[in-house]
Length: 398
Ligand code: F3S
Image (tube, rainbow, N blue to C red; front, side, top):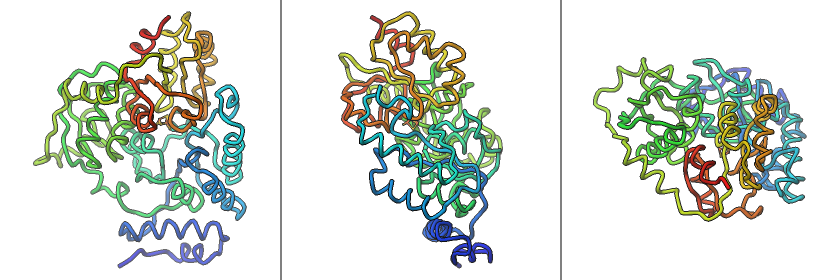
C-alpha cells in the first residue's frame, strides 16, 4: 500500500515550491510511512516546540537557521512554545550572556519563518484556539493533551521538526489520534476522592499516566474541573506516561460519544491514597526552596490567586511565576504583577522553570504546585516539594 501522495504533493516533493518545503515535506512523508499512514491531511494550526536554546544547542539552532535561509515560511497559523529565558528580563533572571545570544538567534530564525513568537505552552489562553474536530499539528505534551481532550481538536504528540514541517507545508500524516478509532478510551479511571485544588488534579494526572502509560483514559467522578485543573491534569498525565488524550465524563466534548466503547475496559481506581502517594514521591523536606508557579503557564485566575496570597508579604526573590505575554498584560492591568513583584516575587514571560537553565543559575530546592514541573526538576537533580498555591505561599511567609 504505502503512503499515497496527491499530484500537488508530489510536485512539492520534487522541489516546485523550493528546497525548504520539499525537505520538510519529505520529513512528514517519512514519518507517515513509519506509522503506516495512507495519506497526508491538511492541518489548520501548528504549535512548535524545541524553542529553548538549552534543549536545541548549536546543532538545533543551525538547523533552524538553515530552514529560514532556505526560505521556509509558515502557511498556517503557527505559535511557539517557551524559550529558555524571558526575552526582556534575562539579565535579571541571571541567564548567562552566551545562552541569551543563542536564544535570541533561535527566536529570530522562527520570526523569519513567519512563526508568532508567543513563547508559551498555553497558546489556547492567548487566542490560538483550534475548533472542535479540526486537524492540527501541535507539540508540547501539555498543550497536545489540552487541545485533543478539552478542545476536541486532533493532533498527535508532535516534535519540534514535525510541527515546523506542518506549519510550512500545511500538512500532516494521517495516523494516530487523527483517526477516530484511535481516540477511543482504553481504560476507565474511577476517581474516588473529591478533588479540591488544581494541585490535586495534577496529582491525579500523574498517577494516571504512571498507571496507564499511553492508554487513553476515560475519567469518571472528575467533578467540575476548572480550566486550570484541566490544564494541570493533562500536563501531568502526559509527563508520567505518554497520554495525549483523555476523556472526562460530563466534562470533555467527546466523552458522551465514547460511552459505547466502555464495555469490558479495565477499571483503575484513584482515591485519596493514590493521590497522596503521587505527592509523596516528589516531596522532600526543604530548607529554603524557590517557589516556582506557572506550569503550564499561569492563567489570569492563577495570577489573581498568587497576587492575593503574596500581597504585602516578603518573598525576597524566592517566588517565581511563569506566564504568557498575553496573560501578563492582563495581569499587569489588574495590578497582579505589581502585587507579586511588590512582595519580592518575579513574574516572567516567554519561559518556565523547566526550560530555563536553572541549575546554571544556582537553583537547588524548588517548591511547586505542578507535578510536571516537579517531575522534570527532580530529574534535573533538584529537591522538590509539591503543594497547593495556598500551602506554598502560606508556609513561605516570613
Ligand atoms: Fe509549560 Fe514549561 Fe510546564 S513548557 S507545561 S511551563 S514545563
